[in-house]
Length: 204
Length: 316
Ligand SMILES: Cc1cc2nc3c(=O)[nH]c(=O)nc-3n(C[C@@H](O)[C@H](O)[C@H](O)COP(=O)(O)OP(=O)(O)OC[C@H]3O[C@@H](n4cnc5c(N)ncnc54)[C@H](O)[C@@H]3O)c2cc1C
Ligand code: FES
Ligand code: FES
Image (cartoon, rainbow over the protein chains, first blue to last red):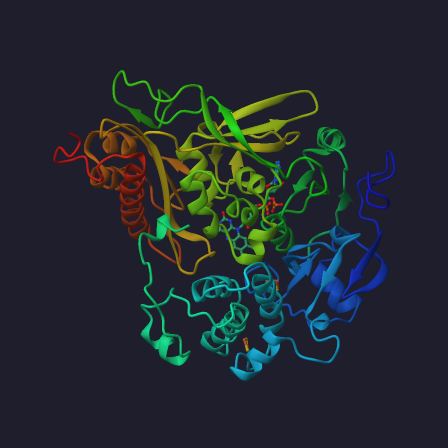
């Protein structure tokens, strides 16, 4: 049983504080937390990292998305105790050097944010997608954003910004996957290509 | 929106976990991906005295290809349909065994899994929730709108569960008994699920409609068929989000074998209860489920190597 995690032999089933060690944006922290403390509240209230926003607190809006050991996670759907021994990345860690990341710059340039409430979660999730699938296409980006509620932008500029970074990563290769979207082809100067609509069920 | 206090238990071995479940099963909840449990706890719809975090148990995050026992498409079990006398599959078929902690996203990245299973995974949540949510959690939770239970039913898959003293397999047909209610006991841990793969003459497909991809579905359907000499000899049809539990639709499978996808759609509409909420009426959902069944059936048949519509004697 994990150190600190279990109850002592024969202890009653009560909540008691547990000692955890986490690395948040590269900094090691040792903290005592109650099991029911959500990771989102731990980050915001205990560590003062209020860049992780909390909208719905039940996994739907995406504003609280962080990475735990390199895997995206809704911070409102994890308990802080679960992250014992883990590395956590929040939006504050992105421009640690003071220099915006390509994705941050692209969002800025494409007007991909207004109030900015949704932005931290989108930066983390889209950053993760671009890491796993550097040349992600527009459909993948749109699917990703179905998990992030933005009340301001109408999403289009966010998709454009993420796609711009993806396109740069793919070395400006023309992609042939949204030939049916003439509007996009114009707006992005993407020549489109011989799309393969096929049976979507048979893709891949 | 904050969970009630609970004791946090994190076993490091499966034996330890099973001991804890035997001792505290009734008042404890297993925590896997947490994508369903944590919101429930935050909304205080459930307030377990203890949470048993199984995410660090070794050996539960593996995917293995091989023989999976006892599953066949059609057959005599309730809900499947089979043409008289046709031998369909055996008791051992090729398939995939998926450890309980394999994530929905992780399985999606895996080549060689069954078609219906592969097709349903992108719908099981959003990008971030699929990175945490587990296949075992989806099956054990029994969400009536869940995709994975529907596919497990259509494929005649199975769940392997363990308690301190025994291990058993539960056929998908026997798993879901009510709203979020399964035949898993409180002292049991689901360790893996078994998914028969499509083989020669067998095909499967999944389809759904949701307001946004990753949102809970308005209705979804999965079909598995066996085709011989161009004709459907066995079929299973399952639908989600139209009843208080994932549903196997026996009459739709019979209609599919006898008269093809359109007949299966009609039989689905005539059979399922339908269920209405602020997103869609029961009538709409019934209609939608029928159309989704027809679509999944047609694609499953094509994959099995049959003529897309059996009506009209294309089975020569
Ligand atoms: C925004 C959002 C959208 C979603 N959309 C969908 C959707 O469209 N379709 C869908 O199907 N799901 C959806 N979900 C839920 C899905 O993400 C969950 O992953 C899944 O329902 C449960 O898996 P889990 O690993 O998260 O389980 P948990 O939340 O950890 O557990 C769920 C239940 O199963 C039990 N359990 C878990 N693992 C085991 C085990 N190995 N043995 C025994 N019992 C176990 C737990 O005790 C608990 O009662 C959504 C969730 C969110 C937050
Ligand atoms: S606050 Fe976590 S997803 Fe909305
Ligand atoms: S910029 Fe305001 S919510 Fe997205």
